[in-house]
Image 1: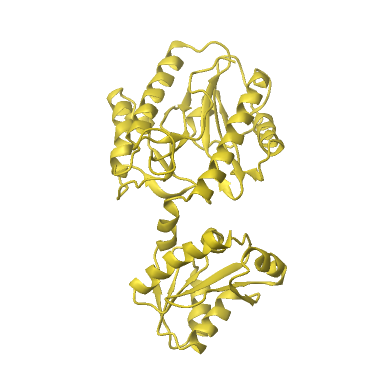
Image 2: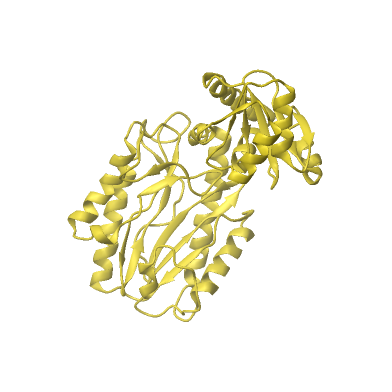
Length: 366
């Protein structure tokens, strides 16, 4: 898709020019992938305010770069940042932007030494901001990742019951996603059973699932470089009344968050739509993380949905809505889905979001 990446680079160039710089050095690998199509463990991109971009990688990825970014000038080097610093000096650049949120102090020192006489200034998260609104190709890949995730869990539900350990369930689920076409799990699957459910990011262990447990399963597939992220909480056997009540509260809070996630909504207001319900029920102290986050080339990316989050949602932005209630010593409930804010090329009424994760949100007794 060279034309898609070229259009993205044009938008990036406009931002470089607006910041009165000669060029920007992109070193955050998801941003390099977004702008070039090259997936690599060692790559960087030089975006001048005007003129051709320069992609750099080492010999391990040269052929892949020629295949995936045939329209770019290619620089083959092992030490990419010093090479670009030298190039900036040779081209007489006055001001070079860099991704300060990603570059280490040691790497910055190498860049400064190689680009003597060139002013270095932070670029900010300009590319991350460009990435928030997804194009059709991105939404298709993300939808495929979410469909794989939903199907994998649905196929596995009959196999979940007393005796299987948290780690075994996580491993089987990850294998199922790959069997259904995923490149890999998007992240390490969370399975938290019984009292472990009170730990939002519990690492699956050898605890066997037991009758009477609530089990939180947080997982996702990666497809075409795009990551799904969803969570379901199920009951092993018939749930107790406190478990039903907790589940229904989280379900109502999620519905409120999903309804609030529309173009133009303030990020903090979307968080509040769900959080206020949980606080009103007396569980404010049991829901301390943000309501959600953007998802795409990274599992957690802009925008963030939290009480302190600035900004407003645009159209065609995929975000997670994932309220939870975590009760120490007893267990927890989290329900999470990916929704794409309404806009052109999304199905449904104007302004309404499209859910990409489709597994039932009813409390299942397994």
